[in-house]
Figure (tube, rainbow, N blue to C red):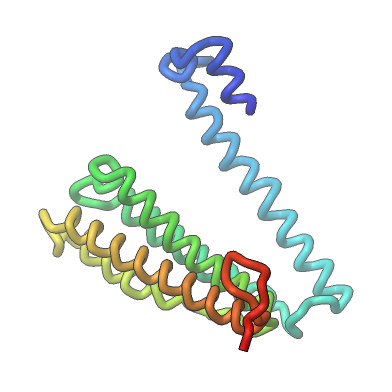
Length: 192
């Protein structure tokens, strides 16, 4: 809301000129987001895990099991950061929207699977299976094996992960509707 009000009062030019010490407002907001994540969210998460472990209120028995859901997102963002910085064709500059779409879809799939694991009280995956083809993509792109094919390969991978995510959502929806004996997007019961 604050950003909309800022734009309404000062116009879009506020985002296009340096704000303070030569930094744009967008740069300051990005730094603020990163600093808050590192110094507020991560310590709070680790503190909550520590308290739950100490009070023996974790759903899983060991600290390893409690930290298990963190590995896939950490590996995902490590791979994506490597790809963005070491891409020979500067994929993040040339295909920003497509790259960010792919990041969002893969991250959503990883998180949705973790949420389902939490809801069903099952063990989280150590390594999400979509990270394996992503690691191959990152390796072949940064090693220069893809060459001029890096952009089409990103497009193909994005289509693939989007289809996988939609399929997963449909399957979860069907299973939940059967379990709760309701139609999807309706609260009516099945009639047999």
